Length: 268
Image: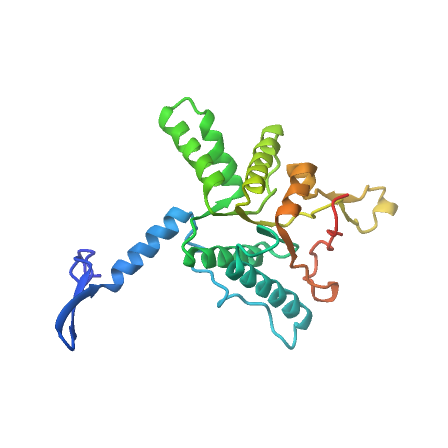
């Protein structure tokens, strides 16, 4: 780009002249392709921080010094790739990434979403908190704001592939439980693809021991589970719709201070 903001190759026309065996011709400039990609990312809702994430630049750790971590994360990545490539010839209609770091899960979720984008499917990325805030706009007294909320609701229900990042990461009211439950139920019955990431245990309640709590008479702490946040029925339907991909690294390779993995084999 020059000082005026125009591309120096095409001078803002979007075309460049090239020589061919039959003479000269015009082809689309690389800036045009970039603008299309940027527009597509904007429509999909991918934040700039993660818009470039792909399977190719995902780091699963060192295969020698972090063998267990490497095996777990590469295994999940292979399953996610296979799912996107084989869809819709799959048993389930979605993936649920859980048990890993927020950054790793978001990376794989976005990489999977972008795989679907390349197949020409309509896709939408939604951060859980921002999704709820956007849907609340439907009740806004301002017509324009309410219209934006209804537009989002339609896209969430009708888009081919929906990715909800940090599912259950925000405590909410009965309205939140009903709203998220409605989205999951709608995509379940319509057999539309749903991708999600969550750091919450899928079932039960994870106990976090407090050092010396018996001597200090301090009660143990607990982490809420996904059913606590979005409802047991929604989680049961979510697990029927999506294949859970656990990204928990074995204890010996977990970072010090991280919560122990919870039993996510079933919803209790």
